[in-house]
Length: 321
Image 1 (spheres, rainbow, N blue to C red):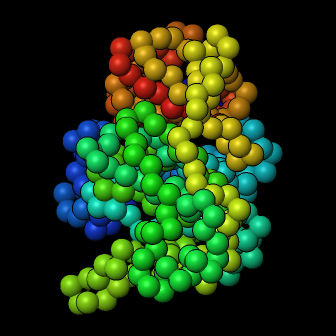
Image 2: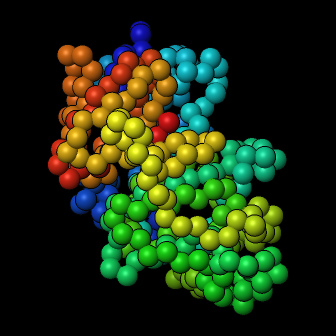
């Protein structure tokens, strides 16, 4: 078996939470299970908590972990078959405001009882209901003492920096940044492949039995970067004549955007994750081409040669590598 010189499609992995909605199905075309409320679609993931499974005939049923183990350099460009894919792509449908959270960096994650990567992430807003907000960082000048006082009083929101997003906005959330997605948002999230989250505040909510969700105040206070301050929307940087615009560039990943109608190139030699949160198009390589629908995501192995992405009018593609 030889890893193909073409992208791979994987089945999404759905996660259910009380704050989920229906837009994964109605807007992004996901075939969600009949029962439950589905809030997250993990599109491409190679983590101990979940592994994407191929839905194409050639490798159908094989997990991304199996393919990386068998073809490490061809898949990721890394020679080690045990090295997991460092990135995770997901879609989130926020019917209610999410808990206020913070993620550790890599060094802290390595010291946890079950070691994990840290979690730096970026949100790309696909849809935003009127009046929707997101919380990105602490207000300027908020220190450890002030935040601890607000948490104890159930008033954490008073310390949070608020942004008012619209479709197409992007926010970069480095590890150590306090954050929460608000109600009414449909978001694509690119992040480090990590499931490490510390909850600071859950809006004083209780379940039907009067119990609140577990918080992780001590751990959260250890990993918050109090020097970081409030976040703002990302600015776009045109990448020469490639047709892509750079949204995020950090030591964990780069995230680029292309808006149709246009034709853009995807260079070979490095793995990449491609998704289409709006519209659609076609991906071409030599005599091969693949139709892309809204909400579809592809993993592009490092062994792939250059690809051409042709986006329809009013379409958006995101590329991470």
